Image (cartoon, rainbow, N blue to C red):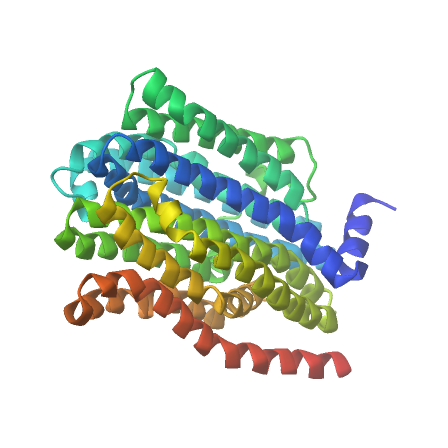
Length: 450
C-alpha cells in the first residue's frame, strides 16, 4: 500500500473525534505560537512607550493584508487539493499547489515594493498619529521586507494542513515563532535597536519559517509538488483558486480594514486608546486562534470526505467540532475574563490603558461563547466549495457588521462603543450563521440516507 492509499484510508476511516483532534491540535499550537510572538512584539515594544506600542497596532494592518492574500491562495487551493486527493487525483493537486504558491510569492513581492515606496502615507492610512509615525515607519519597513515569506508561508501551511499533515505545518510555524520571542529582547534591549529590533526579529523569523515549510515540499513529504512546470496560467485554474479563497481574503482583508477604522476612531481618544485596543486585539487573537485552529483542523476532514462522498462523516465532523470548540473556548474565555486586568497590566502600568483594555477584553470573552457557530459554518462551506455562503459569513464579522459599528456606536456611547463593537459583531454573525448551518446539516443527513 502506497502513501496516497494510506492517507485516503486515514482521512475516510479514522473515527471523527480522533481525526479532528489529531489535525486540530497541531494547527491550534501553530496559531497560538504565531499569536504569542505577535503579543511578544507588543509586550516588549510597549516597554519603550505608549506611542511605540501604538505602532504595532498600526502596522498590524499590513500583516493582515499579507495574510489576506496568503490565505486566499492557500485556502483557495488547499480546499480543492483535499477534494482532489479524496478523489485520488494527484495531477490536479500538484497543479493547484504550484500555481497558488508562486502567485502568492509574486503578490508578496508587489506589496513589498509598493509599501516601501509609499511607506509614510501608508502608515497614516493605517491610522498612525504624528507621534506614532516614526515608530510605525521603522517597524513597518521590516514587516514589508518579510512580505513574500509571509504570503507564501500561508500557502505552504494551508496545503500541508489540507493534506492532513498539520504536524509538519506546526513545526515550520512554531520554530519561527519561538525564535521571534527569543530575538525580540535581544534586538530591542541588548543590542539597543528599539522598535526596529522587534521588526527585524519578526522578519528573520518569518523567512526561517518559510524555508522550513518549503523544505517539506522539496523533500517530497507531501503528495502535491511545487514546480514551475505545474503552474497553470489559465483563467479557469486561477479563477477557481480565487473563488474558493475569496472568503478567506474577505475575512482577513476586512480585518485589516476594520483595524484601520478602529485606529482612526480610537485616535480621537489619543495614543493610549490606540495602544490599549491594539493590546486587546493581540490578546483576543490568542483566544481566537484556539477556535480557528480547531476549525482549520476540521477543514481537511470535511474537504476530503466530501470529495469522497462520505456525507455522514462530514456531518459528524461538523457537530463534533462545534461541541468540542465551544467547551474548549468557554474555559479559556472564562479564565481571560477573570484575569483581564492582570493581562492588560502585562503591557504596561498605565491606568488608562488597563481601564480601556479590560472592558474591551471582557466583552470579547463573552462573545466567544457563540463564536464556534460561525467558525464551523464558514469553514464547512468553504471546504466543500460553497464559496458564496462562506463569503457572506466571512464578511459579516469583520465587515458588514463591525465597520458600521465602529462609526455608529461611539456617537451614542462614546469610547464604550469602540470597546464592544467587535464582540457585538461576533455575537450577531453567529446568530445569523446558526440557521444556515442547521439547514445544511439536515441536507447532509438526507444525502447520506440516499
